[in-house]
Image (cartoon, rainbow, N blue to C red):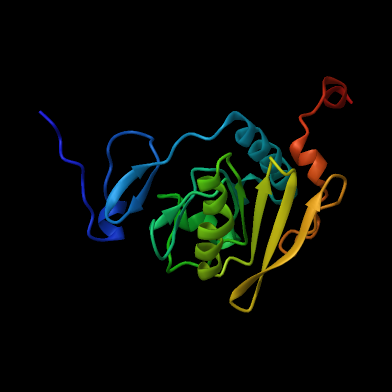
Length: 197
């Protein structure tokens, strides 16, 4: 017997759905689209960044790929690779790890570009537009192919390209001013000698 795919008329209907798995889905035109697993390289980069931000802000303020953002347009939700949330979000996210449109936006979202033209367009164009619409103050696009970190800052209601960081350039953030990491450190795996120092 073939089971019909669920169809959702509202985001609230989707939020009450539980298929009994830990799968992540984007809600696209009322239907669930499974979010594919991240590449090993993207996970490594996200882990490095998680550690840097967690040491500065504490682990409660840094959320990995499982944090869901309700957005306008299609799909109706996104899962950034890394999100820096506000203090007020910690309590609001205890039951469900979803930032709704009715909540304040997170401080910063980071997307790590996956290989392929479709994925590049999604991170550089579609997600940029949706995150801008939410009023997220800062959006990083971490591009491992180009080994660059593009930092976009909200200026009024529009993102401006504040800077593109590469190699040994120290990344600057208006949202986390004590940040101390270079683009090279994000993309280079730690050698055994660096780990033991």
